Length: 119
Image 1 (cartoon, helix red, strand yellow):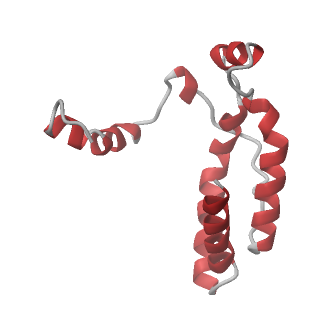
Image 2: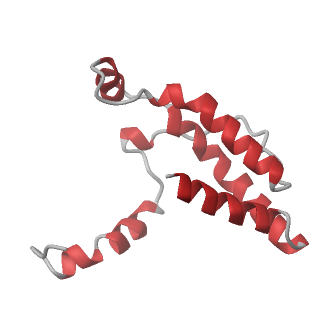
């Protein structure tokens, strides 16, 4: 996991501190996606139960550490932390936008094209 953090942070910093165009595109991406980050830390009933049994981690316990790491990375990349307070939620309850359909179709292509195959 640390490899992925270093790799992605390296690109975040290179692009955020790069050209004016790369910085603008990175800030735009952060601004557009930030509203979805709140749901990462919303625990549903199953996650709460699994956490109580010591099987899984309650995602709410991870939020402060994640925020600290992400805020530091964004600042180091010269990017602004969005101030939007209207976080989106509902994905864990099955509420998705129309954009999910094409993504699922793409991800399921091989399994549907070659049923019963093992990789």
